[in-house]
Length: 202
Image (cartoon, rainbow, N blue to C red):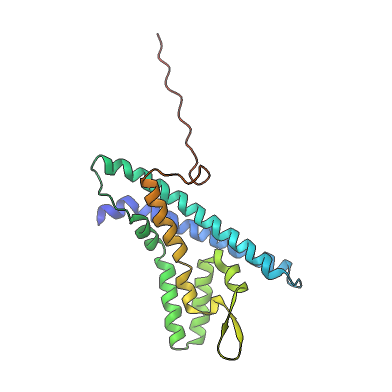
């Protein structure tokens, strides 16, 4: 276990840092588009579009990060230094998403016991932590109750568990493909330039 955290703790922290950075970016985009189109009938659509862009950008970043981890591990596995763990990407993403899971669980508990103030506070933190989904959660609404009332996704506790799934699946796939050295596109995993061979003086 100690060796595992020694080998992968930096990668987990880097995943979390990427999430926070893109969360700030996504939240800023959502607020900017909401304010700019506040009186426009199409503001919801535009906010949704920029939110989807932020989500895809986030998934792109963690995909390339996890793919490289899988590619590096392949070398160690081939020489017998590490066991092959096909689901390691999923595990690393799960560890990076522990803060999200904690706040999702807190929001669920607050919802069950109808703790209004706690629900608001936890919902705010959970939404900001996953800010790339912020625009999506405030624009997409679902019918709730028999009165035909529509509520935003960030007011429903399952949302905070569901939005973790894309990251888990992305890292799971990325590690597996990285270990197999399979590239979907050079866009996802840029080719590294080969260094010039040293010149031999005659």
